Amino acid sequence: MNDIQLIDAEPRHMEAVLELNEQFVEFLSPLDNRSLAELVKMSGYARVFELNGEVVAFLIAFFPGADYDSPNYRWFNEQAADFAYIDRIVVSEKARGLSLGTKFYDDLVQCARSGGFKRLVCEYNVKPMNKGSAVFHQRYGFEEVGQQELAGGKIVSLQAYALS
Image (cartoon, rainbow, N blue to C red; front, top):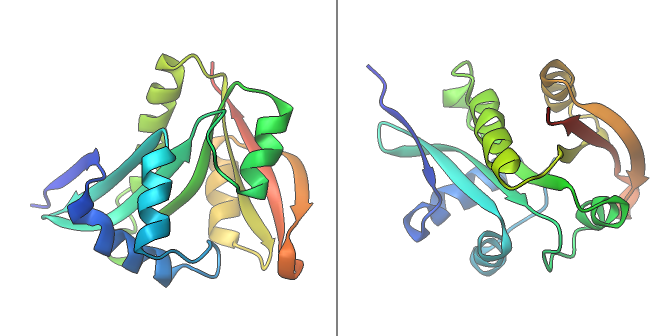
C-alpha cells in the first residue's frame, strides 16, 4: 500500500523540489537553491506530498503583501488583497492519477478560508499552451479574469476561484 503524506516543505525536501521544478521548467520559471529558499521563506504556503518517503509533488503559494517580484503575483496584488496566489505546483509523472493536485488545492482552500481570503488565484500558460493545467483548473472551477504577456512572448491566463 502507498503511504502518502502531505507535509510542510522542509530543507530536506529542497533538492527534490528543485528536480521536480526542472522537469516542468517550460511551464514554470527556473529555480536554484537560493531562489527556492527565498520563495519558501516569503510564501504563505509551501507543502509537499511524499509517497513512500519520496517527494512526488509540491505547491508554493503567496498571500497579499509578500515581497515577491512575479509580474503575475503583482497583477493580482494590484487588483485586491483577498487572495491566496498559487505560484507553482508540480506533480511528478509517477504520482499522476493519485489526485494530488486536487488534494493540494483542497488543503489550500482550507488554509485560505481560515486566513479570511475570498479566492484562490493563479495563472497557466496559454502560449506555450499548458493543456493539462487548463483542463485541471477548469474542472476545479477556476475562471479566467485576464491575460498577460510576459517576456519572451509567453502569454498566461490569469485565473480565479471564489471561496464560498
